[in-house]
Each structure stands twice: as C-alpha cells, then as structure tokens.
Amino acid sequence: MKYGRLVATCSIADDMERDLAFAREIAAAFIRYQRHDWGDLCQEDKELNDQALEAGGRILAAYRTSKGKVWIITEGDRSATTILFPSEY
Image 1 (cartoon, rainbow, N blue to C red):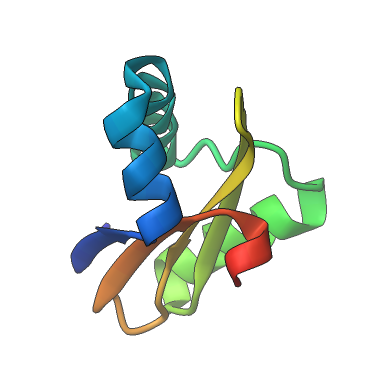
Image 2 (image 1 turned 180 degrees about the vertical axis):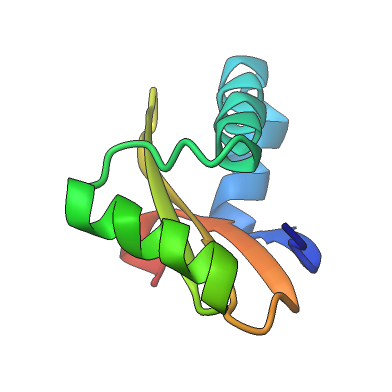
C-alpha cells in the first residue's frame, strides 16, 4: 500500500517529542497499520478498509495509547497519511 506523505498533527508531534514512550506507541501503531491491523474498529469498518486497499478509498484505523485514542488516516488518492487525535478531525 502507498501511504503518500506521512504527517502528524502538531499535538501528536509535540507529545511525541516530549514523551519517548508515546513516540514508541505511535511507531508501534504505524507498524500495525502497515500490517493492515486496523486496531480498535468494528468489523464492518475493518472490512471497508480491506476493500479500500483493493478498490481505492480512504483508510482509517484507531489505536489506544497512553494519551488516548489516535487515528491514522490515509487519503483515498494515497497522497498523504495523517496521524492525529480524533478531536482534531
């Protein structure tokens, strides 16, 4: 899968810079994402992500961290993948 430009919101980046453990959690979440482990989603949303791998379309995954849930979203055109807190969407 292509991810495009990998970016994080300022909140994620700042927290990663201040907290090495959180930075490791984000790295682990992205590894899961690369393995198509979509994290804390319902089965229907996981299946939609699997379909988007084949047909195109946005992919969203959710992971629990010490700072709360984070989302990883890859745009449908694969131009970018963003790591963010759900409140930043």
